[in-house]
Length: 260
Ligand code: ADP
Image 1 (cartoon, rainbow, N blue to C red):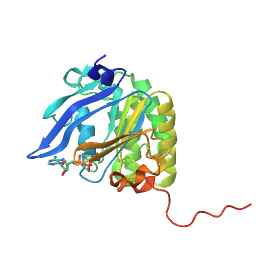
Image 2: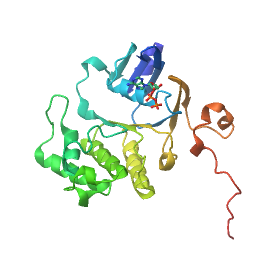
Image 3: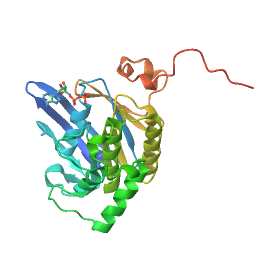
Image 4: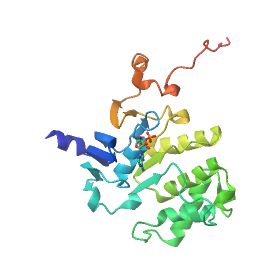
């Protein structure tokens, strides 16, 4: 088996020697990695290190300058099964521009790039209700999206991803502005999905409630993969590469007092 075969073997997503340039600078610089079923992967790194560009390159939302991406074994250019992939972007592109309801936002996740849905209307309505219930926003389904807080709007986007029932979830900072209880709820949803064999790729600057879920961590630094492996040991945390991942460090201050 060649090195290339072992990379792609059983992988749901691979990027090989992926480079993305914006003008003269390389936002992604010769990145090679593969993502497998049942993996919860956290992509960490300081601002501007290339985390979002990595997600966008995997989705074909930014063109590669060089290198290759394949999804579920198919080269990106020929891939058509987009319902199998859910992407939750960092920001809503058009929040407030059009009066759209919470329910309509979730339902829009079913429309593929070809403008068709592969589920019936009944299935769609049922999955929409279930997904909104899962993120704790079912009572808000008829409300206008722009009447919700930023954190609630992120939960609506997440509901859209859940309703699609995909193989792969790609989440860009899904917990920003989301309250602690809702983060716990999200973590429990993604623990179940991971255990069912789904792949979850989470871009974040703060793992928060997801800390215990990530079996693999990728740290980006200036467009390159600076670390790719299991969560760091206390010894590894001394390496400057982890400097910005403050929530992986043990809490500062005296040890908690244990009664007994
Ligand atoms: P991160 O997600 O880690 O904050 P990004 O992937 O968003 O980093 O950005 C990586 C680098 O690419 C940064 O230097 C950023 O300024 C640059 N960049 C990102 N998007 C664009 C764009 N559309 N045009 C020009 N430069 C960009």
